[in-house]
Image (tube, rainbow, N blue to C red; front, side, top):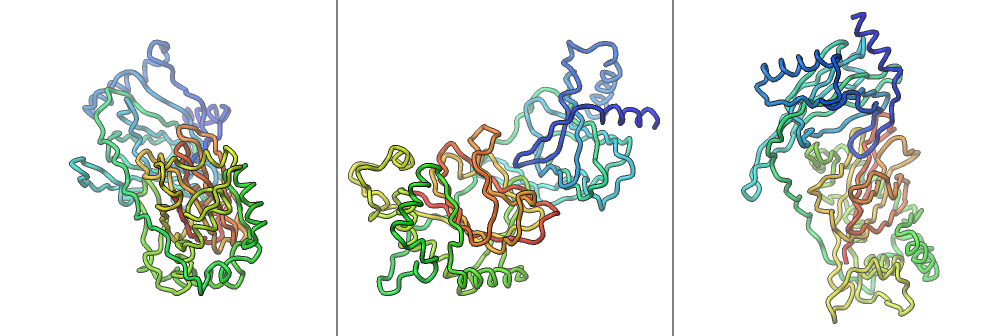
Length: 435
């Protein structure tokens, strides 16, 4: 234990780099183990351990080992994943954190999984946590990396300690893994024809957004930035009633569906529009009037009546998908929607098989019951360029704010994990419009 305590002190003197994306938030060092050809005599014990590991696991391993030191502090986490990358065969975690308890978070949680067939392909999805391993000082955890090795590091919920470990992988020949199957896209709906005798927008929208000059100003900014935030979008009376309705539905568990699996997402969506005002807001965003309004404030063509002026700039034209000659723009525009509940532990990850990849879409989100929300709570809607790490746009939820953002085929989005500092759950009406 004296040696391990000294090791811990030496590791804490290293330089740690904060790491944060859709999947995780923690700090780590650079690689601590060199390539086999760079190893000196001090690595002999490591080689002995690899030989022992080959013997007890019967897993074919080579001499390559990854190792870094990870430090998890308050609100840090690592969400559900399977670790499967080329050559990774055995994962390990060596704990260097004394006096840790389950109540402080940070447990290594292992998932059960289910197997199913999709067009002749065997797919594995995680289901629920079946074991939680609390960090124990001077203990080592090993597990095989395989299609069912789903695991996560539970969020740290204490500010008085940090979870320190050496972690990495023992390498070997790559084994075949199941192919990724693209998720099924939810149904897309054409707009609902308007009723000239009972226009919807004046019943719902703040009057300022009905002004043609205001819409032109919004379009100018949207054309420049490809996104805009429309504050105080709904009439306050309508907004308050909608907030009250979703809060009333909060405790009706049968009306909410949990969206998973954990390797992709965790949030709840409304299964039914059982309250009149919830049905009405869905109808509003599906309405012909809303399709035309969004056309007017973005310059995109979601309705045949969209004005296509000759002086449209190149940026707006670049956002319009090419149509067959003779097809009136906006004729076949569609949308999909969800009414979603986000609470502590909710998230939506980036994933290779997301149906949104390669899509041209106008993403529209109306946030409800947000209150005094800050970015540090999580729950932010983030956009990045595909295969890049830097965020292009981060939208922090704000009450009665309509977020409008254009997503082209090279952009993807995720919802940041909501941590234990969040004061309450929030809701949004999420729409995606496709020309």
